[in-house]
Amino acid sequence: METILRAVAAYVFLLFTLRIIGRRSVAHMTPFELIVLFLVGGMTVQAIVTDDRSLTNAFLAVMAVALMNVLVAALKQRSRIFGKVADGTPIVVFDGHWLYDRMDQLHLQEQDVLAAARQQGLERLEQVRYAVIERNGTISIVKREGA
Image 1 (cartoon, rainbow, N blue to C red):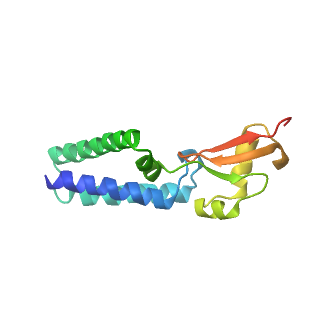
Image 2 (cartoon, rainbow, N blue to C red):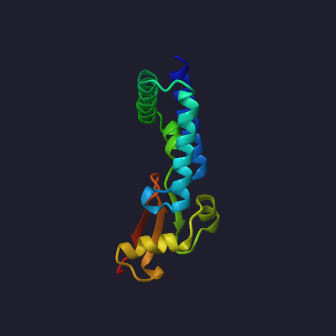
Image 3 (cartoon, helix red, strand yellow):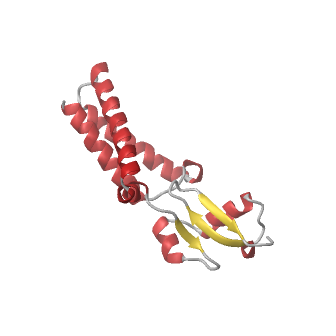
């Protein structure tokens, strides 16, 4: 039972820690961000399984985390407020001009947005109407008409 409680606590802790760290899709993560993500995961596993490295304990921990994931998904479906807390909301970072306060909160640089624009075939910033950071960390570009 202790393993299950530790796994649930670790899941909740990691959910909120990752919300604090910020959102970036894995495709947009820097090597530093990937290292932090793996280290946090590795350290959390040690806290969950403690000295009991049995197969049963590992299965209990995995099942507890899987069930927490199912529970969080169900709560997000039932409560829009919980969904905003767990996943966040889309954030506009360019609306004809750079919204630097939002970009700073997201640890986002102009180059990240410009790269997303180039991936959509846009060559100049003037061709971008909006840039939005989605809940999953991807950058959506809305083109200006005639771009």
